Amino acid sequence: MFTGSSKGFLAQTTPKFNIGFGPSITPIASPGILTFEFFDINNDGIRDLVALLNSGTYATLIGGSHGSFGAPAFTPTMAGAKDMDAADFNGDGFRDIAIAYNNISNPTSIFLCNGSGGFGAGIPIIYGTNDLNGTDVRTGDLNNDGKPDLVVSSTQPSGGRIRIGFGNGAGNITNAIRAGSGGPPRGRGRRL
Image (cartoon, rainbow, N blue to C red):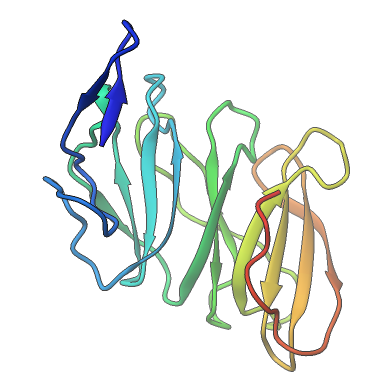
């Protein structure tokens, strides 16, 4: 990996995180990484890494200067985690994470960033009565009110569905609606 300097030069460094290409110092030992996001979670102005893992946990790695990362801190989450996206759901200036679960007992949830390197307990987003198995989640301002909204695709109970939930700016999603039915979604959605 090459990192830039303030003088315009590139310096070769050894990355501390291995997602399958190159050496690493602090790898995440897990059955697999489902997805990851880079953003500042501890208010130091340096991008950190949050990775959703197959093992039912997510890992946070605090970014250091020169493109390095600290050791991963693992946080258990609910079973069936499938996808994650990030947005500032409560307007505090820190990006939070939304995790979709492919488990009928665990609804898509928002985890609010505490600003010091971690996240609070999940806030479940209820779209109906036990009819959401999330496979993909995306965030974006769908109704132009300046608050992030959620789009979740599902494959249960009888075919694919899209759920749209509108952010209230206080860390929760309101006025969730269901759109579409039929076969399961094909491919992955584009980031909003």
